[in-house]
Image (cartoon, rainbow, N blue to C red; front, side):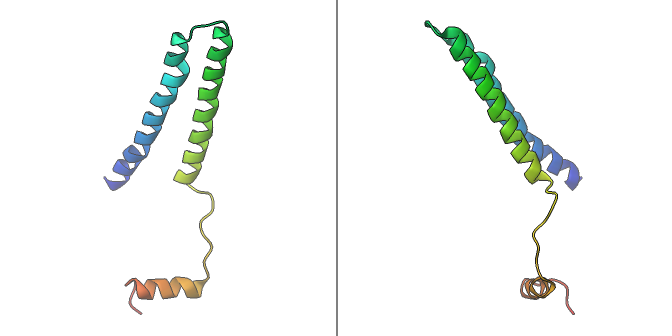
Length: 88
């Protein structure tokens, strides 16, 4: 049960950020007026796509890191002793 709620909690930021960038890339360009309308629309769409993709890659890489922090065994032992870990 706890693992399922963690997956749901990880999905909430993805949905919120995706909705934000969809608004920037799909809704806002519809309200652009002026001589350079097509250029500004293209810039907004490409900006939304690139920013969303960059954010998604950064978020997913932190969600399940490939490598963890390196810590000497002595330091780990001291931390467990200080924070009330296993009693030896």
